[in-house]
Length: 134
Image (cartoon, rainbow, N blue to C red; front, side, top):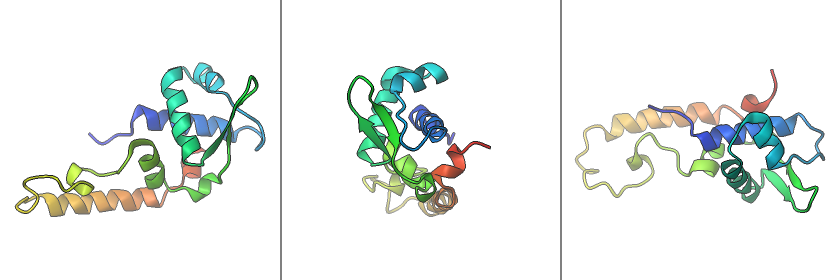
């Protein structure tokens, strides 16, 4: 079954909550975790990934937290998924050609077309489309 992971889900929830605040306001992992019933440790690691990708800025200190530093409309969902989870592919051979059967595989081409269609769809959806309030 194709579905987004909990880490992606938690990152989207966090970014959505951060968008509700002023641009300069900080949001702590504890605040997001508590308000959304998200495991603190997983969310903290996910926020670190977002900081390394320059999507959020980490501010250290007793009143520290994170703030959104990019325009969410500029990040496509394919890119976002790959920041959180690595290469996006319907099957491993979509991004890793170590399969011993790759030369004789009867389903590789049709699966690649499905994978390309999914990537195209997510390339037409921005992070803002998902995280903005209705």
